[in-house]
Amino acid sequence: MPAFIILIFRFFRSLWQGMKDKDFRALFLWVLVLLVLGTWFYARVEGWSALDALYFSVVTLTTVGFGDFVPQTAAGKIFTIFYILVGL
Image: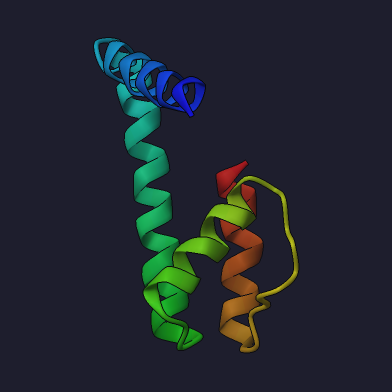
């Protein structure tokens, strides 16, 4: 357990240090915007809960693609195509 706490501490410390770099901040903001946009879209169009929509957005942008959630509407499928391309 102490190793996990140290890992979390180092992660947030690195994140804090990274925020001092202009390019890192821009990339971090871009990722947040993409996650918020995807979460909003999937919750609204597909009718998923906010947590399910966020989960799908993260899984999609990290190219993991478990397949447990799949867009059912045509709009959702088209958005997902562009969402993946922009996210890459």
